[in-house]
Image (cartoon, rainbow, N blue to C red; front, side, top):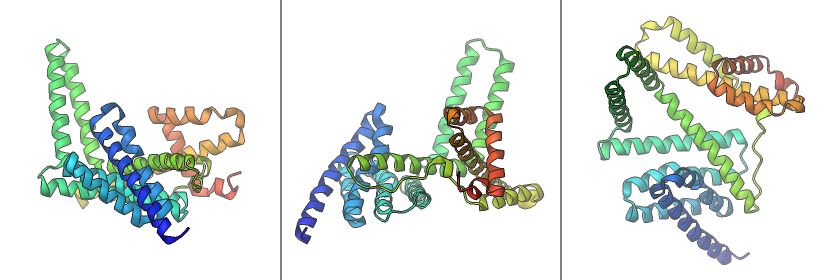
Length: 318
């Protein structure tokens, strides 16, 4: 293929990609029932262009899509979509083109999403004067007050309502304390979902994509164990370090606990691989661990023990 033919094909596919990205954006903004699906699929065409022709073309496609969206839906929404989903598509395309491993691809994609989120947050804060976290808290507080006033007017027991309200407010305070962990977890979930969706789309287009490691062979960084122990010690002996230290150590502890839980989920999937007749148990155990604290604790300790002694790795996942 001559360079001229290659450039012509890249330009043609870039135009098609920009059109698909704009259509998906409009669906994500104006069609509530399909908005989540459309935005999750958004990075896939950008990743396709990156795999075929490189990061330069995928970056130009994102810029062109943002320019068109700025004229149709406004600069705020266009910038948000480009920063959150366009950059993820660029990262996925480059990772697939360079054939990165699953762990590296996940880490880079999550980092790019979080950087885009941080840029969008500061743009909203300093350009529009809107703090999205404070706006969320105010909206939730107003909705909570309205809900409890409605229940009170319907004749519910005032003592029980007060207990329920106190429990709910305590839960909201805990969520506020864990907001950094919530944001990072959202980035990890978005990265994982976009990897799955983009891989499925690219494989349908007959593009060879490196396989994602099976769950039974997932390994969280071994440093998680040491960081978790250090966070517990700092939280126990560092009560005088102040509120900032409490926020940091609490978020680190919760993050490490969830990483150990993921390691425990991998242990469950590996154990079921050894006993195929119990194959159905892996999904039942995963769902129960989300809703039943005892099951989550069992997987947490399974992951902790596996990480401590490298049991699956020593057996080469057999």
